[in-house]
Length: 144
Image 1 (cartoon, one colour):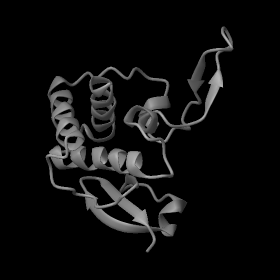
Image 2: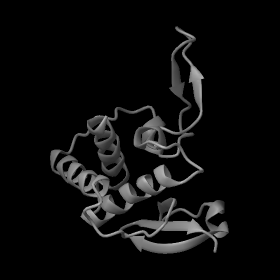
Image 3: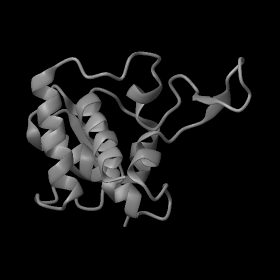
Image 4: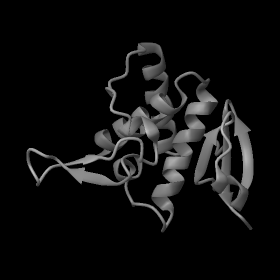
């Protein structure tokens, strides 16, 4: 169970922040852990990372797949392979996930539950409290 959770957390760090330094990977991983602790999200890491609408397979109605481009974390349902290709970034993602999972790193994002890249302007951001900017991500919590 721990191995699966760490794998999901590391995959998210890799795909969301592989082009950033360690702080960027730590920050996006901390958002996942904040969501696990929140009553508004699933209570395990893989369910948080994989959250989004699904549709049944046309071959087998008992099998469901994520709806393309509708997931909480876009890499998970973009229709592309989720296998890391950059070994260096993957090793950093594993380190970040491990540090965050075992709570061995400083909290960089406080109680943030959301983030977005700094080159987009999602409508939901106006209704949230901006917490910080790390790398090319801006992090948000509930309005206080």
